Image (cartoon, rainbow, N blue to C red):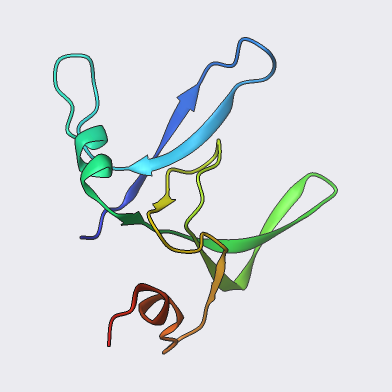
Length: 102
């Protein structure tokens, strides 16, 4: 399954607020399918462009990385496999090899 991401803002009582990338699914107090969708999945991969931050300004690079670990800034997970980041290169089968798909 493929989902685009949305940016959700969170209030942090212990410090500054932060943003988090989540799947763009319904998630409000009246109806929600996002958390059930994430729980259903064995693996949720977040792909992001690598960024360099210099003097407070970020610029995107040409490379991308696939993340399988959860952090405050992204929703992702790996069930039963390594959650180390994978560099995404065009034509690479690294993710499929990790999942055991042939």
